[in-house]
Image 1 (cartoon, rainbow over the protein chains, first blue to last red):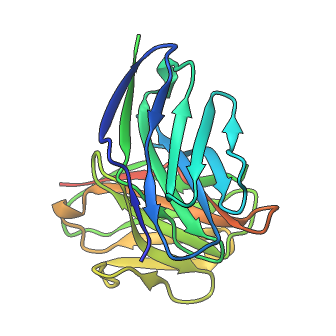
Image 2: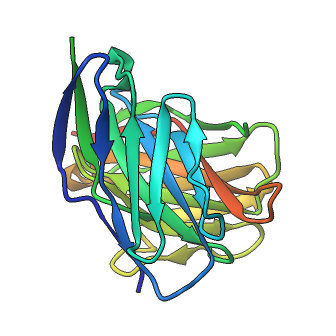
Length: 114
Length: 118
């Protein structure tokens, strides 16, 4: 069975500071994709960053980067230079390469404090 | 990226009535769409997988007679909540699966529909 765990229900960070959201997952498969989605108050799910499991290099998208540790099944998200617009729920998710279903974590509510 | 729309964005109905929610892929064809339900401050719960031209696949615990799914075309899936009751009040999100350039699948989410049953 596939599971995703986010152990931090709520976090806060000062504007312009850096914050790291943690995510661990469990699967016996070797080929999969990992994602971080952002859900702001509008509730639209927005893709933040994506990582292919076969790639060793950590994905980066502007201020967002991940620390992907495949052996440890860990996939944390680092947000640098936090902005007020980063306030949102963040969901970690993964899907098997040939799979059909997304597996979501329970989410981390991030608040950026001005 | 691919755009998925949902209509309506918010619906209020009386208990006992049926409500239809539409999910459309605007600039691509989606053979597979997914319906999620999200309670306040909780994660997305997959309800069913909607396959074009065939019956939907429901997750365990989801009543197929209560939540009717029809995927009549490659760009439209509908979710009908039949005989809605207050406990059906929730946020419903659809998504569409797209094959990415590297061969793997990505999902694009609609903006969601807030259902309130009085």
